[in-house]
Length: 91
Image 1 (cartoon, one colour):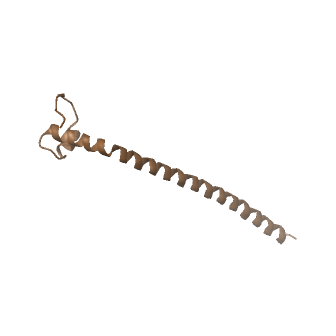
Image 2: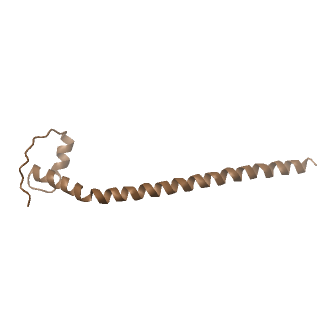
Image 3: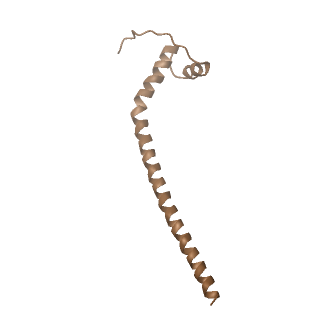
């Protein structure tokens, strides 16, 4: 087990202190250390999940853009058909 040799005093907002106090541990230092350790252990997993979600978002944005292009083309076709119908009525 790693020996605790590093001592520091920190200033923080009351809301941060309250959050740290909710963490598991006996003392404030234990609670803070447990919170940091938990974050360190999950950091890689969280970054991977974020990267996957960003990739999924990019794919969805690409699909939305493709569908928007199809919609624009369909609108142009619709307008052309409407004009053709009007031209036929005038004949």
